[in-house]
Length: 397
Ligand code: AMP
Image (tube, rainbow, N blue to C red; front, side, top):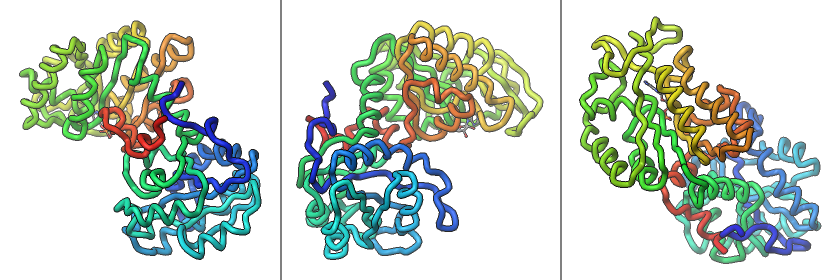
């Protein structure tokens, strides 16, 4: 039983259903250039429409800061949306008030209408209650299908749900179920991989994970900070030397919580951050002063894979090396492929997301094999940090 309400808990037929979606899609010259986010919301829109609900879409676009900005209008999305849904989509130039009413009143059961950018109103990001009430007037029921916006307590993600019955759409549901399997009540042992550039951006995340997972792999540039904190000379590697105390505190907490920390034993070093730079695989203790660590070494990769093979759940955020430049993508690619294979064979639940992780897992051609890859950046990270997501809390059963 999910701990949140879903479309299964409500009757949508004949109702005006306000559906919060993520339409913050990449655009160029008034055209949608990547429709992945639209693809994700189709199941919810299709289901409500087929069941005879009136689908009224709420979304934000860009950062207009509470003012009308024609460059951030959602109008150009209508054509792509309508093509992908396979039926006409009408548009209202305002998300509240007489314009919205004029678009919604003539709707028939099964019709779809898109309302203009919620962030054209100051009340959206302020989560103003009067604005939330105005949004709520447009519907009989609220469905949230925008996990990626759920870490923000805004009127269209959180406030509106305090004025009406609120449930998760199918995409939100899939995301929450995957996350639940990852950190809620995961099958143990749980292994987490946290990589990327800097420790400073991931302090809360590391602090939360050491108390929850059994094994924590620290990779990428941030591993250097931990190595330096342990007295390892990391040459001219990317390293936040000033975070030495913090790194040692995290290591001490991990020991107390019985969380095994896995840092590189061997690394790939080069003289410069450049594709195909001359490189060598060396023990981590032998980094020359004029070299930088750009990837985890072969032995480390084998060790991480052996640990994945004896784990039941994997949570992954951040690459193990400078994966955008060859050959420093090797550790990330090999570990991602191994995790994908374990998942495919039914031995592992694997959840990845946040920042560059989607690009890294795609680069390794492993996303398709993962149990779930979240395209939500900030919301996924806050979930990994153990924070309450306001837009999810309002859907709690
Ligand atoms: P993040 O957005 O924090 O997940 O960081 C991702 C970035 O970390 C990528 O652009 C990688 O190139 C970078 N990165 C990973 N490992 C290293 C490393 N050893 N040295 C420098 N940059 C790295």
